[in-house]
Image (cartoon, rainbow, N blue to C red; front, side, top):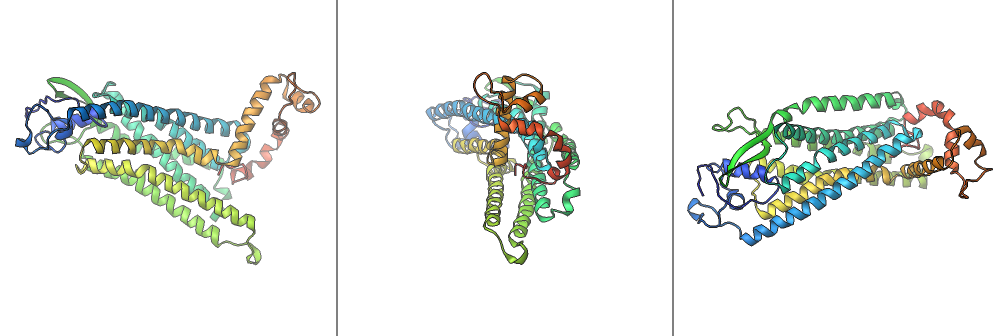
Length: 423
């Protein structure tokens, strides 16, 4: 092995193969802790350089094979489940005018953010695992890293807005009626996206494609353009960047969500009906809300903490790269990305209102395709005239048509939290 910069070694293992190999090989004279797993040559004796012996070739090949099979399968499953679940949430809420409240608008925004996160983050992270080089060029490297951070922030801070919305609805149900309107919800969502898009511009600037020499050949990697006194004196401070991201995308939103929900639960359990009597139905409702709050906070904290911790440790060179640590990082990535699949299940599919709305979309859609003609005709004749296949149109569809004139009357009520809210 030539410590001057050109490395002759078998392909390395692990997440972000190109990036890890780049850092290990370019900074070989500065940081040699990663070389035992990523820049080793089994034909040489490395003990003279103070390094551990390289892994066995068979072990390397086995881990490579596992990564090349497991990562596409797991990430592919996440993409399929996440796309289906979040797209279904958007479809169901958008297709039901009765469900267009402040809470459900936030749930649509959460589903859209998760959809974008799955599209722009998961496939490219999987590519980074499997391929030893970056095949998409410098501009797309910057765009992908930028969109990953933007969509992650959008998803997380939509959860904060949702916790604020629930807090206002429970703790200040009367005074918040003028605040919790659809117009204000749309404005809050728009402001959140604009702030995130502008605040994330440094991510675009601080990432890029680099070229390095490995095994007497040139390779590319999409990496953080970290400052280096020799190769990149005008680079960026990676520990500062990663710690700020950890604080703003995990610690701060988690603290806000926990604080708002804790205040909500205290107010919910301390409140009592006139005379101090609490009905059994009220107690059941409180327990249901408490369980939902605990699950929401726990899932967010558990899903995102491992990968956030690993990224911070790597930025300060405290995360040793080994075959085991690479597998731990793969699991951590999968766990974080699963959060975008769990959100529609947690906020929508477990809700009775969502399941009813979903059945309504399916039944009404199939019924309207089977029964052509004007809406008023279908509504007035549905109970007397069966379809050709012997089935009558769903009564819910007729009821919805007949109630369409009442939407404007009930709009203010729905905007301030009605029984049609998913949560």
